[in-house]
Length: 572
Image (cartoon, rainbow, N blue to C red; front, top):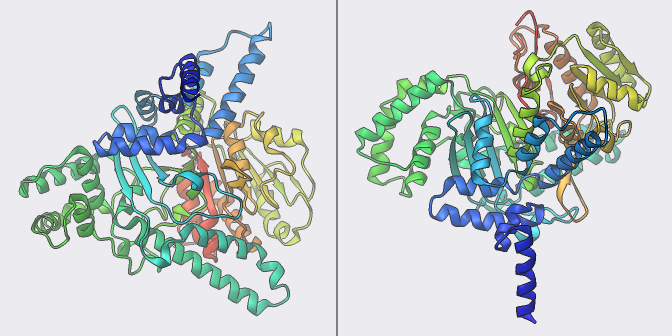
């Protein structure tokens, strides 16, 4: 019986073109094959096959999203083939299908080559396996180990790879659980403390402090010295200086390293000191280059080779200071499904930096290729702040929000809808014909424009969803990947979505909305504030606008999904 089953399995595999279950997993990537990718990636790492490991782990990200996007492309192709007036399928459509279906290592590396050389992609993959990849609703796994791959893009991409262990201290083993608990308590605080103002503000302050502790634990107890891998790449001049400094240090110590070790070493010594960043949260965080060097070499921090190497690093302090103070390129975070709910943008090395998220490398390359090949796209043209549309309080039950924002929207000169539900056609028209679409109301607006309808639109606009949990990804029963309306916008080719990871307070969010809208239109903020001279980079503008929020929970909730885009403004 076993032999017959094996024969049947082999016949099925041969018809698909696979020689083994592992081959099948690569031919038909899905959330259910995550364990296979992780196991084979671990084998690759044992023999230092960094590119193979990166490729295998990239196949664990957003496979359901890829399938949804491929379904859209199939429908588009089928519609054109049945339309006599339509021309044959353009090369771009075929190219997009290949990008999403890339399952070969060389094809994965080509995706990095296609991206702009001033982008840095950081892929963070959870090492969890088995039941942890099929979570039940309300069941949160413990804090996992991580695989971090930091990728420079462009014609000659590099991949720097490092594993990060599960935190060992009892107090930080439940980072993922703690965030979920904070979110749940934050969600019900209005109901539990209605009319009890003193208790309400005390509880809100407690939740604020707990979220600060979570972010600090992410940096200090989990990522530790490998926080340095999350930072964006340097501009060519500073990168060349860093390479020269590295060469001198290794030459002085008569030490040789593998290519991956050299990249890790450069990340360690080139990372800014957190104590020199503004903000009380970073105060007292010790970024230990010496501990990182010891981990890199597999030696004790007291060993002679670590002491000598660290001494050589200190001798280059003047040059390293220039690197630490240099501007950094934008970062695109590709975050695994089980850790996507965490506020990665608030970790000290990313705070106040241009950071966006994408569900996978394939979706990033797909979206970039689509917009880069279209001369009228806002990625190519830039975002025109005079072309916008707004929906303000469509349920007509947020009078204070309307009062705070009505003048701001009036001054923008945009058309919009206030205290009235938009129709599907109004929603679609705004997404396809405007450069900016701003929704201010409850949730993500999916009650007016469901995700399945959004997916049928070809979205031009940058979308601001200023509602509670508007870009949250949530589990759906035993479906192995979380979903949210933000993914529907990506299926609709939306270049960039800005929203909230969890529930937020209206006053804080309204202040953020007002300052963001003013900054997008080139208006200067208060003297001495981060938005006094608003940047053209939208992701950087969002990062700086967080300072407007009074509550840390609101700052940590703000999130950008999509491509790094820039705003057109005569004043910039």
